[in-house]
Length: 311
Ligand code: F6R
Image (cartoon, rainbow, N blue to C red; front, side):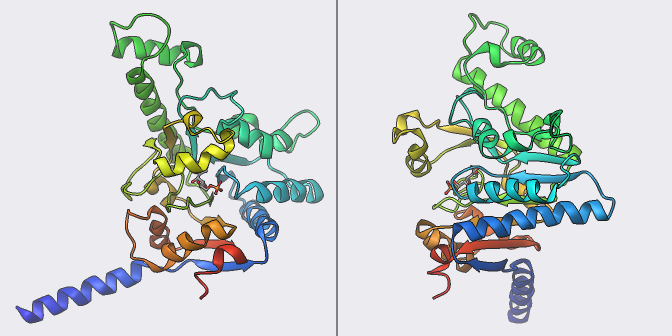
């Protein structure tokens, strides 16, 4: 019996050690240098796949403060090297539920203002990213006019007694769930994602996969924690009541399905979570630890974010 238990423990620990692969960590002087290195990494993935004749190239993007220098550096690099983006497909991680796409704090607005406005194909930029290749989840709102004809028909079938034009919360959730499932299916169809860019929340979330989210989760309707809403209120003039409570977010399985993952973390507010992500047990309590189950993950950190981990 004792031999059996010893064998079982050895087997388990060898599996655990094999599964737990510490990401490749690079530390840069500051957030600008992280941005430059990350932009170069994105360009390298595009160039390599092109050289191998393996187009399209599928990129996963994140929003938030962290990737802003990356997007600025990437736009510069594209301009300076005339990088052809016509074979690039993009998928964003998440979008708030309840904000129309046109809202200044929607992730749609964020991505266009920090990245896509300057990269989207046009008569003057024929090698840009084709508009139809840009994918950002569409968060549901209470307005019927935000629905496609197909969605309106499906909604009427699912809620035959519905009245008026405003969507109830239940109806919004139902639409959001349909959109989340369709988004996951589209990633499966056009993917896998070649390179997924990530930031990390101070509580260890990735996308809006908050603590407690299953590692097997796929694109889903996610509830934001109060902690995340408080932190994100800085984007809403400090008014936490304006921060949506829900979002559509890639799940952890969706993220792990990417061929390669690049996590960015900058600033001292990320030092504690980076230390925890790298040193604590792999657990859904800290969703970012799931990245240690992925064999091709890199962390690009600045000195401030790496300070505790390096001690
Ligand atoms: C953004 C996202 C989030 C952020 C994270 C860090 O699309 O999904 O997980 O990456 O909240 O945000 P910042 O970069 O603002 O610290």
